[in-house]
Length: 249
Image 1 (cartoon, rainbow, N blue to C red):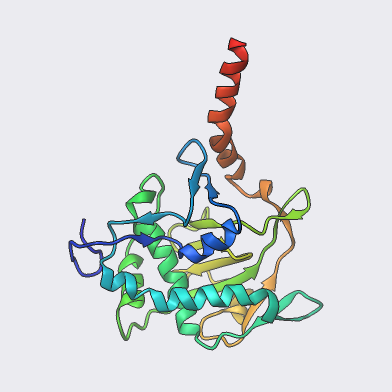
Image 2 (cartoon, rainbow, N blue to C red):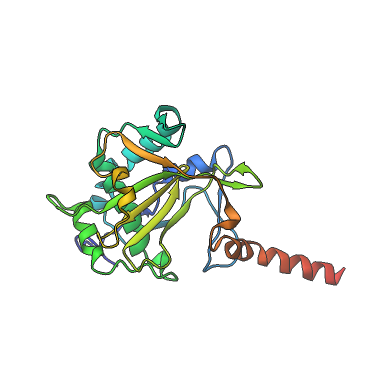
């Protein structure tokens, strides 16, 4: 395949989520764990999922500035965000809001266009071209709205800090709303301005310095749609193996 931006046939390794985030999740362990609705079994990764077919070296390097900015920004939220409204709102400095927007858009774009995700319905429709122009072009006036929320996912009350949920469409929202979980934050991108939630307009992250982050109530991970199905996929193979071994004992 050729670079999706310029057509150069010399494509390179491109992480769908910046590898630094996976390394943060992995911590001192030698690998992180991946589960999927589409694939059975548990996958192990050292630095996250990547694709060798979507970008040439020039356009892979073009993402470095926004990726590096987002990595540093996310890592600083826990220590630099100022709380208000009895802890229900966080205010996080954001001196380069343009780079944060580019990161959000590029993270979703990379996952959506990658053949690695062909098992899912990740079509961006007409917005793919607009996102690509915003990410890699110059002078794009496209400015899709995004919000950031503090969302703690828990398991029996204990926070799951080492958690990444890849970009996906919101159920019932067609192709216009996408979200992902990263760094203890829930990121939501709206590709057009239809059905705007006016109650959230004051929390738009576009152009904001500081960004206002609404703190949501903690939720058990098993309450999230699809999580139990992913768990079944991850452990079905082991369960069947143990059943076979027990039957042969």
